[in-house]
Image (tube, rainbow, N blue to C red; front, side, top):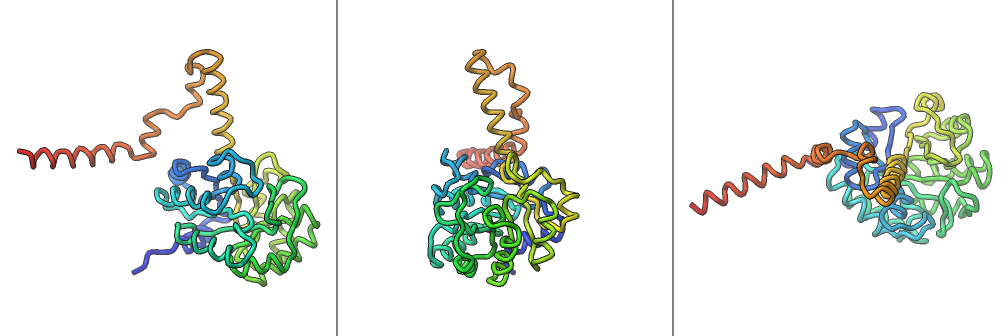
Length: 288
């Protein structure tokens, strides 16, 4: 009997939790932390791959293989269904997008979202975004599974909803309206569409930090927190670097750090050690 697919596990998670909390995991270890904390889904951000793995801005510079590398590392150690940001699909043609989808499925992704920006895309919470035509985005969707729209900030609510309706008609399983500034706008998307709507609750962006209850009241299906842990990790790292440089010791910032015991516990480190001990014991028995 075939195991349950990653996509089916993602859909099951959406049924089990409304809205589904989907937290960003910048790497495989964070994925394990999220799983232990009780989340039912995780997210791999394109901006996170660019910043965290490449040290580059989120401007369409990273490529498919960059994303796949981080994706495989996460799915190798974490059973949670993973939603993946594929920017504009990593290529202009339907063939490129089809390749992206097939590669994600092969690497264990549960779902993906694709943007309706031009190839040289920008972060959805930055000015200057340029959209492709609705028809071009529909062509992208025909080779993809999920869709994301940045049209709200560029064209206004009514035009963004009209685009989203076309995307659903083209086969989008989910709509990701970006940079929403008013809770009632989510309700407008939900009422106009017959597919789940995702809310991106990213910090320091255009969207207020709506609570789960508020999002639930608007009918939102997925609450996304793409880089919350990453931002906290970066702030803590900078404090540690500054303290060591300034004070010549890390003593004053130990409270910011995870302990060795906690690290080992998350990694199940001692189970690996016990397995090594058993293997070595067998080898020693053979030598006798």
